[in-house]
Image (cartoon, rainbow, N blue to C red; front, side, top):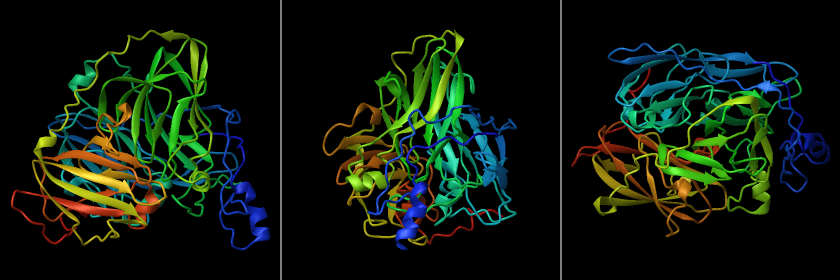
Length: 505
């Protein structure tokens, strides 16, 4: 992947030498003498010239079971000028192929580990048995393989996969281990939506990184929400441009950054149609000019273009409910040009978007059997740091619950639940905004704002193997802002947690 380094705006790392010369206590690249970052502004400064890399569709062996093979490995990647970076990838040197399967298929994924340390692979957003979830209880040791299998039974959606080793998730994803997992179904396939992968249906995996002058990927000092990079990659490409060939293009946007949030919009202010959130299609297209995605969240949008025009996908400053200083420290004040969409002189016509999309049946609140409360504060949930041997919550299968979740202090946090897709009942007692009306598995929590989430736990039970819930700002997760729950049969109780039936061999 040959790419060029793009010119930056006010660079954080540009202040490092000055800060180090004046005070030994300043260790953050680009930190001002007052201990806060200056905002980055790359608007109009990115030399878009590198063809957007489209992750290939993973090869599959189809039969009674659809089989995929992934191998985690180290490699070298030419991402920016100056030299090659040491990166990690799956079936390659950076990121991984796109897995694609249909609802009703049984899949088996053989994951090999050629790294020098153990890792895992978690299927983010997927409904599946806890033993196949790929969380911290399913480690894959160097030289080992792990082969989870499950039947896909959920609506069409843009999901993703990434490592989940306890205490090391941020570093493993930052180095490059991630990829999309697209689920298809008959209903979505019947709709007149852009769907030719790599042509008018485009993966957009957005990450921020930091590189040194030799083109090497470096880990910066963590501050507030983790590592904040000053170079934006899409599908591993810096300064990317995509050649648009159709009047309507579907962008499957994934925030795969470890800490940075993005408020995506188009540079000329035009509206786009959001058609799906984390867990699948919305009820109807939603016209927006901005969509906020925090780490782990996804949105599918459709962009209309005319022949010969250019439009840039941009991230705008965000109001995350933080102080001015913390807004700058977390990257929320940054203005970032992300991806250039360049339309050809002739574009393939496309049908109008359908007025109705998904079948988002609301969960029955009268059927709720339990309400649980979760406060995120100081790298803890409900005052507890993650303990691999402790079951925090016990859920009964085939029941519906409400989880009340809030951020109890002034840092940014979001909340991700494994195995289920939830619906947002209310935000501080008010109905959720339209972009939060569909299926979600990850949601941003502004400080002191209470969210009521409704979810139903079905099909899979395992009293000794838990699922996770956690902040998806991964430095926070690694430091302990995570808990775990088991799903049991009616009247059942948890057993001692063990990884014997979930680990790779």
